[in-house]
Amino acid sequence: MQRILIVDDDPDVHQLLGAALQAPDREVESAYDGISGLRCIEAAPYDLVMTDVNMPGMDGMTLLERIREARPETRVVVMTVGSTPENIIRAIRERAFSYFSKPFTLGSVAEMVERALNSAPWADDIEVFSARPHWLSLRVRCKMETADRILQFLREMKTGLSAAEEENIAMAFREILLNAIEHGGGSDPSKRVYITYVRTKRALFYYVRDPGKGFSFEKLSHAAVTNPEGSPYDHVEVREQLGLRPGGFGILLTGQLVDELIYNEAGNEVLLVKYLDGAGA
Image (cartoon, rainbow, N blue to C red; front, side, top):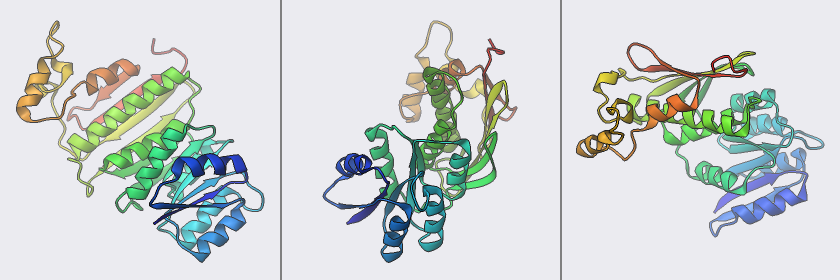
């Protein structure tokens, strides 16, 4: 049985999550404050702990730190109404598996829980080099599930833009990160991708560097970005011949979702820029 502990002072959260996460091979238990939650964790191991942040006695961030001391292998998902950049950064430093602001969709949480419960060894998948709300630098393993974890953390770093614009940025960053992991790193978990997120008063910057040799746009016949005008699907046939998965629209799509998309000469470093005040319009 996979054991899940929900730590939250709101009975409604226990009821909702308990129903959403129930499965024949799972045992879902409840604690209603941080101190009670820690006692449960010290008494027996859990595969996953889901904790609120604001609770009486011991807050969820302190509980996360204590879990790391008592049972460092435990996966922890942090949930909170009052999300702050500082708490998100702290959660990443303390190796939380994921982080969600309330209210959240049960579908997205259930999907992340499934990933947490069934993921391969994960403790060093994300390494922190700089962790400040306006400058976050990470090194991550070339694993698709790690990309989804990183994306969820960055989604929580609210930008002040509209929901549609934030979703565009998330889609663009995900596409670039997956390209770096899949093509630059060959989906090899022994290799790493470097990521830096920087926020200034006027812009957001997302930098990604993969371990590959890069690429030349002249040699991207399998990508939509090189299709001649009036022939938007020429690359599809090339991908079929090369045995590649359907797609190839990544770079073309990404360039339309952000204000600037800049590659280095080798093609293994990329910078996404989104202006906050229309400066790039």
